[in-house]
Amino acid sequence: MSAMLDVSAALKNPGQGYAFEVSPEVEEMEVLGDLVRFENIVASGEFTGAEERVSIRGEVSAAVSSRCAKCLAPVTIELRAELNAVYARQSDPDDPDIYLFEGSKLDLTDAARDALLLELPYRFLCSEDCKGLCPHCGANLNLGACTCQEGLNVANPFSALKLIVQNDEEV
Ligand SMILES: [Zn+2]
Ligand SMILES: [Zn+2]
Image (cartoon, rainbow, N blue to C red; front, side, top):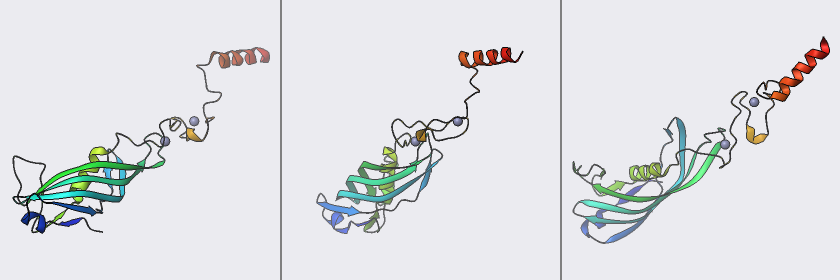
């Protein structure tokens, strides 16, 4: 489904609000080294024309998938962002946030993507208390404690004591 809005009526009737709902498609992208995928994007709200410009007001929602920053498991979150954008036929050096359009149709994809990116979490987590991976063997600690460090724990005074006792017995 496209994210094109026909704004010809809005440009002819400045100040009049027009409701819209579109489903932009945003390609998956790398964010801070992780692939992020956007699905089921819905942008809805109202647009208003004024002097060759169109103001968009509404919200955009999407199912956003990436991987847990700690255990690398796939994570999908529901993201909702405010959508406030201005489209114009010409760029304006005083207003670098303007999106451009030609003719009587504008493509909402860029504004929807930018709004979602602003709301992306700092990092994705499969759960608030994800235990992550064992730094030594890579086991997923959410599935249970790993045993890779058993017997190597020289920081534990009791295991050191046990070694001494064993050595004495051998003499
Ligand atoms: Zn996790
Ligand atoms: Zn381990």
